[in-house]
Amino acid sequence: MTGMNTVRIERITPEHPQFEEWATVFVTAGGRQWGRDTTAYPPNELAQMWESLAHAKVWLAAIDDDGDVVGSAAIGMPTQDNPHLAGFDVACLDERATALKQRLVDEVERVCREAGRTTLMIETQTPVGAANDEAAFFEAAGYAEAQTCVRNGQRLPVSADIGAEMRRVIEMNDGYRIETVVGRLPEDWLPERARLAGMMSTDTPLGDLAIEPENWTPERVTAMFDEDERRGRVVVEAVAWHEETGEMAAFTHVSVPAETPWIAYQDDTLVAKAHRGHRLGYRVKAAVSLALPQAAPGVTVQRTWNDETNEHMLRINRELGYEREGTLVEWQKVLDSAPGDAAHDA
Image 1 (cartoon, rainbow, N blue to C red):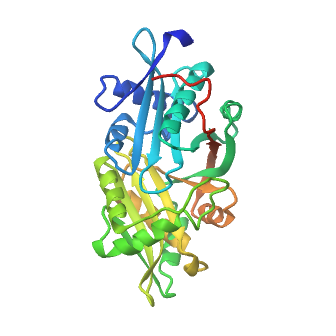
Image 2 (tube, rainbow, N blue to C red):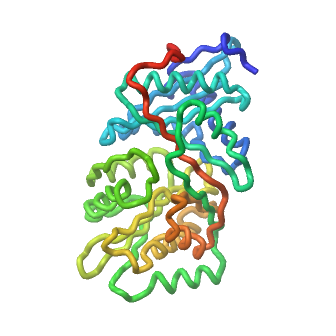
């Protein structure tokens, strides 16, 4: 294992000569449990994400005496709302290097304190049947389990029977219309889409996460699609319209990375409270499942995460053919006002 005294921690950007090495640490660490199904961002996506203004970023590399990157941390701090929050990820090439991992976490906390961020969040994911080996580490570091989500996967294309049922439900004549778009949304959809995006932080189960309402505008929705485009992602979105009022009643947003074209990520799904009870969650998710084989022919699995208490959406997933793959735990820590003794200079 790498000796603690032989490692320095420094900040890194996409222009750094060891950026790809830094980014690959996350992929390697995620692959230990998930293989090619790891959700770690590949280097090219991380480089493009650096350009996004939605989060202020600080990226940290732990470099040993041989000049090799042996540990990585990435911090993202929301810039448009939730000024108290910071999310981060941390990984080491050697999974036994807990002292190095703690040193990176200490540095993350120091950076966040200096930026005025008081609440930190990090997630861990564990396959079905495996133990969460990181739980003890984060508990010892003062983090509490704030939310538990079920990770599900849907194999694509769906079976003929499931596909036929999807089409039947989508085409129900009950005053709602389902529309699917590949790529950017029409301009006149953006105000309604922004209204529903804001509900993701108020109308969905969030456990004990200290998330305040988010402020979404049409411009922010456009910026989100801009980022997907820069990252080379194929985006498929389905929405439900209430024909009497013209309101957007539901949406689901799915994206497919260029570097892992076999995985589709269901990033967000929401049904507005006023329109629940019409199977709209099922219908928008089904519409995307049917569209993906044409929009992104390489996709073999669509992945989604839902709070473990959200039995309604979990039941919909089962009806759509999803199967449980694992568990995601969101850990949260409220920082002390003063830096801890274990902080290290970058």
